[in-house]
Image 1 (spheres, rainbow, N blue to C red):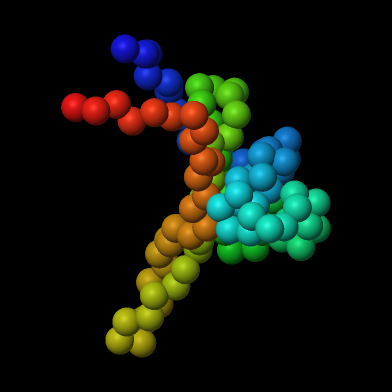
Image 2: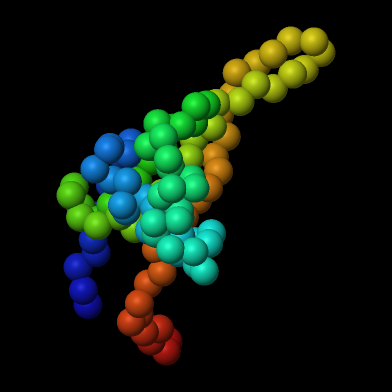
Length: 103
């Protein structure tokens, strides 16, 4: 039996750009290069209007294994706007070399 790893989810930092770009490429645009994703999607960096990006890492400082965007949204009901939050762009790193053992 192996020890479980701890996963930490935290807001992205400027130094996370390469990891976020790679996760997005693997999840949403596998035929693109990391350079294309960085230029096309993150030309203004990780600070995107109306959204906050988060990164899931192994341990406190391990590699990025997933990311998502938290969107600031407005819901209109009976003429009133209610501020709400949505989740989008969930990217998860592929697991390589994992074996499924029979029961």
